[in-house]
Image (cartoon, rainbow, N blue to C red):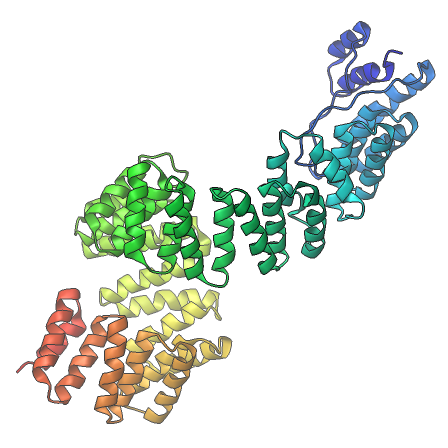
Length: 591
């Protein structure tokens, strides 16, 4: 019998969507087609990632009364859906689907129920569709998708196995995609159990072991995950995906073992570019920069236009103090098809700035867009403009950036205040940040920065009040304890309390070079010159800062090691030619 219902549904839906002429033509021609669909709504039950095929439409009774009723109910449901009455539309479609048991109506009813977020109804209709048309792959796929979405795993394994077996050609890819179907399932142990059952018949496929390994990893069973990944590699020793998974799992316990496993794999498979790239990244993470650089250079020869290779080569060149190579690779990178060029423009700006090519640096920084490099680019650009005597322009640009990105206003205001401070306009810098603090009286960064400026203005009581408030708000703020303790030590006052504050800071951040410098300074003030020198040498080894160098020179001078003090300051001046601390120390500690 001709499927009259589906033909009339096509006409009815076309009428509901505002195309009466087309609908009339199709109905008159009596075409055998599935019901036309409205645009798919969001919130529908997810479909399986496994292959799909349309379900056949069964014959139904040729009844004018039934057909007219169907047309009317479809029209009613679609108009209700267009008017936002999703629950009414869902109920109307569900009733119609149950009465007609037509696959086309069932599929549309499931879509609308998903749009209405009636997942109980989605599951009921999906079960009915699979029962009405048990040979339909599409029906089975929808039912499996709904069961997964609702975390109903009982009895699901046999259905998934049948679906996998039905498409032998796509089986390896479908096994690899298996875990993606359960990405939102909260019970990772249950997912592991299910995937283990599903993969059991396919043990000769490395992809099956890979799927179990991924599920085991997500469930926190790292040993099992590693064993399964290695079984996959036993079946296919040159499989990059398996090697990368093994390394990822090993890295959780021992980055060195992960690197070793990748090195062995790459030696046996020299064309395995993804494994080489991951190995190079792992070497960078372990700060084995020389090895990483050599490997990246090999990758660059093989694939000179790969952004994933070009960018790391440039960054490693910067770390290795090779600005020529870094600049060449960064300039090449911005010519490639990469979605965001802010990072290379930012680093190009840094290279130009360090080479004192300030106009180039300004141009590069200006091309940095929104993202993690935007704020430092704006701050560096403003600092260059200020050094060029364009303080007003620098401030205007920072203000404009703050207007564009209000979430960055605090950091941009602090940067503007730093420009004013460096221009000897400390009162103006304090007023600027104090005004911002008035809007956000408990903002930690503003409390800290206004406290430091208050100290410069010799407003010690205000400095102490704000730092103590910051400690109250953030009792784990090492910088707050350190700033308060150092301010006392620098003025040679309340030294026991200063030491307690700095000791607290050092417990919170034991390797911070500036806190080590503060501890050295209070130790020096208390008369332990040798102890102070040891701390300063440790701090300077970590961070050759100008102020630390000046402190170290003073201690050396007081110890009678005057030539060493002079040498320390001369070396510091080469590193920091604009440092007032170093120049003042050179004047004080001249022979």
